[in-house]
Image (tube, rainbow, N blue to C red; front, side, top):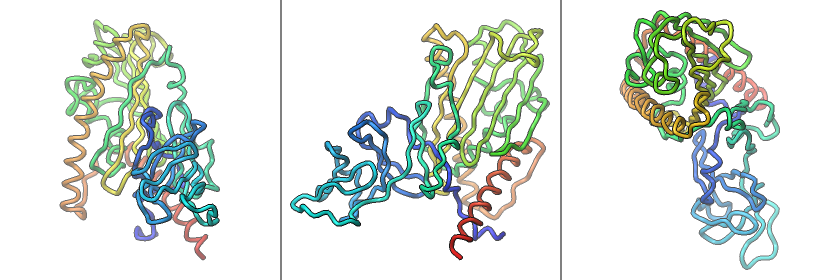
Length: 355
């Protein structure tokens, strides 16, 4: 299939729209898959998403305000409820049936607000990536952030699916010995909805973040498990146990445990929003542990952003120049193939519907 027939984004999928507390102040304007949206909570507290364009004179709805019955356009006062239906036109009792704006399916689950950008009739809530650790803050206290990045969202996925960069980019936090990363034992597989890998670095010196978190005194057996779910979510479990504790046989032991949700939502072909949440499975009774974790993780991801935005700039300057593939690209290549397969499948469905 020719690339020109394939959309740049998977539309029939759930994307992270925002963190729930981003709606605490009322109205949130956000662009996802090049579509301007306005997000808010309806009078019952349910998160809603509408196109950010009034049906009257095309004014952005985020210039308006929340009222008892929905969101009021800041230009001429039309009011729309969470379904997009116009429920009030000032000075006019009759509301035309066509008065309304597009609404998007939204689900709030595991303290995450997800949005479906495609055909509403295909919005299957069972396809939402589960992240139950958000609901168990006693065992998994977490910190989170939202970052706006000038890069194609798949460059962020590539970065997560090839961790050999850790030893070079993140030397002060989660990095470690370069040879340990290059020689890590890798198990990579395609899954039904993406790709997964687990890598082991046995008898290795723990990086600074691990030592600060769990107080390791010697070498550890360290693992990193990442699962990419098409189109834009990666779920991570990283950890380490003291050598000799049988990490390969049973990882569920006291040591260093880190769960991270990486959700990279496309804005345009060259910009994205990175939602990350990091939960610490160590020193759960110590509030300082999560504060320290944020202090370690956030600068680490800022380092990633610098590299990747520079990468996007170079790609933009010469988009037809081929990139060299190396052995470390195996997992990210599997992720790219999984995305490509879904894009082709969805484009095929779109083509058939048009016939």
